[in-house]
Length: 605
Image (cartoon, rainbow, N blue to C red; front, side):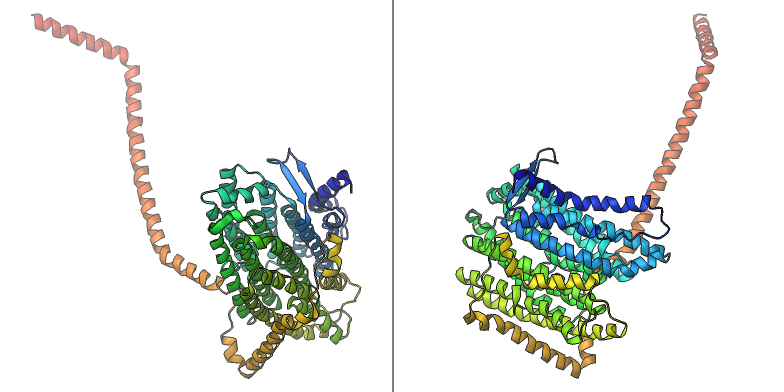
């Protein structure tokens, strides 16, 4: 491909979603029809299409624009190409899915419901705006563009989370926004500290120069935690199980499938992975990432299997899977020589998880609005991405073998055992998700079936097929993953078998003691609620003192105001006296002169 065509595709990939953002208000302003125009038309759904074409046809290259901010540099290399391909594909199919998912909003808007029309327009604007930020951070090599894309994606997604406007949606949006502001502050602090110390403008210069800074490891800690908010690091994951269940299903799919990977992209772009010069200073950070990642992988599974809403279960599954990805990144810091082998595995893991988790989230909406398929066929199709995420077949099987082989090569066989045990939790989470979906799907079938040719089933089936066949179409991007040998299948499948057995045992115990198990069920958001109550108690305890301080402040201000008024009155009186003296100055001077003359006269006499 010529450089001119590559540049055109790159510019189109970044600008086309923004054009569609501006198109929605213009359509509304220029519309003269009485009927509300459905803003989620087929053209709106093409927002990620130029990015997908860039990933499939663009090859490797770069685009530089010196007039952009501090100098724009956008790069498409092999890792970015894979990340861009699965991200654009997920956004494309989820956007088509949204056209059917929000058709009810269109009908209510056409019936005169102003709230539905406002929600529909808000979704139509914030969806491509969030996408534009997601694409920009994937392609950006200069620090300014990278952070701009990250911030736009983060804050625009708030409009998607609170789409319904319900109390739960606002609670989830509040948790999302609080954690987002915390993460953005840490990221901005780390980037400004490092870039200012190094004089770096690009991520490559930043990453390589970080090892030479005296406080480079502390900058790394800030970036690990800041990007960890988006990546669902244990303790910073609170927004995921609160935001996912309340967001529209297509928004949940891209939140968990694509946007959370921005945290992983941030780690790979800014931390000195694969640099031997990083030494022991960054090795302890890698060990911390290992420990926290394993804690998230196991802890999220334990809390997730207790949830009732399938999207909450899937949110905890994302925390668990991202914990495994954090472990692999941590190994890259502790063993820099292994990172060239681990980096393609991490990208493959991200692509597999993004497409598969997107298919699982869209499957929740399919369970609520099932198409005209036999029940057993629908159950099988819903189970396929769950089995893939558990590592039984398709891209999940290939991904699990890839990271096990890489860790064995680096001498981390013990870590393979821990990750295999974490995969047991993944299987249990998938079993819980399918159980919750099956219960909801039985009720949905009584309410009627959707045509198979509707946008929702078509998009979901395409995404399921894309996720399962990922190892087959990745060679288009010059990536050829290896399939595991048959002798390794038993070692790859035993966690799934053990997870199914534990899920059946847990289901039997729950059936035997439903009330006791229900009382011990942790709520979605886990730590958010005690923290929220603790802050409430803290506010309740400090509020009387704050009221007293406010009263003292008011009294102090009142005293100063009274003093100022009295001083002002004295000044006014002095000014009046001065004016009187000016008016009678001549008479007074004559009187003083006469007085002095008389005094001299009488003194001489």
